[in-house]
Length: 172
Image (cartoon, rainbow, N blue to C red; front, top):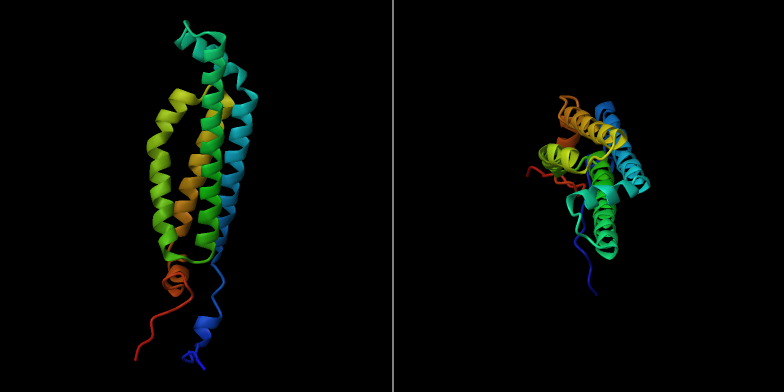
């Protein structure tokens, strides 16, 4: 009969430290970022009719079928993009709240991508003030998250979590 090798667990492995206030605040902001993405999507879909005039101005030769296809395509891209963005916020909230050390790096990478894309998205797709304001709020939330997760009091929480699987290196 197969008997697994017994593994002893130290108290540090069994009980994880509670996240510091800075990480908890960052996680709350990440949930807010996901909510803002949904609000942004709703605003974009409600003001979808404006896309007709924008697309028709750019392509006056479009037939009504081509116009409808272009509007539906852009709306589909908006929905997919918003769902991916909200999912990324939720994923990072879970990972950072769990103390996964890699999550800080991924959060920075996503923030940088958002920062680089902000001028393009704002100038090309923001068709009303509400969309532009929500986009800026999302960016500010991202900035606050980065500041909080790299705060000095957050570092030990990520270090104690080890590789993110609840294991720590043992010295022999």
